[in-house]
Amino acid sequence: MEEVIALYERPYDKDYPVVCMDETCKQLVGEVCQGLPCAPGRPARVDHEYVRHGVAEIFLEVEPLTGKRHVAAGEHRTRKDWAWWIKGMLDERYPSAIQVRLVMDNLNTHCLASLYETFAPAEARRLAERLDIHYTPKHGSWLNMAEIELSALSRQCLDRRIPDLHTMRSQMTAWEQHRNNRQPTIHWHFTTSDARTRLQHLYPKL
Image (cartoon, rainbow, N blue to C red):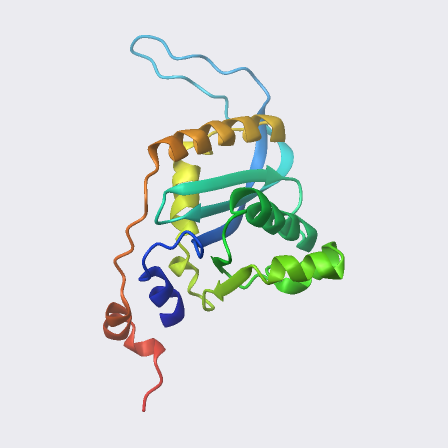
């Protein structure tokens, strides 16, 4: 816990950016009956019946100090999906960074072994050397600032019925562009001192 908090307290460094990433899922839901549009004095109405079209897996990363984020949706959440996401982050979104300080939870796919299962050894090693991974502790995923961004995504973009992956990707792209144009940064206020005061029960009794 203190390792992640100390990382957040470091000043911005373009050569070693701090990036938080997380994953979630969203059920794809279509309409059975066409709803009624809104009218003066009457809100839009949606029929209670719906049809399921599977589940979309969502990957999101955010750089708290610059307000830069990226989000994408796919059909799976495997080791290879995570590995390709990391490759895109390092080679496309942070190509000039010496090393990315990556904060994420310790899901079984979030490990360097996933790179070796996906790419040739030399490529996997090249990517691994550009990662400085910081895992959030068990039951401490709230330390990952990507959860704040996922909450904003859920409220502002995904709080409706979305029938298919194409529609979801289109709406998330528009949301991402709007957020990146505004560049809202995340101001983290929870310090190591706060942790030692408020979370004393997590520390060993000496």
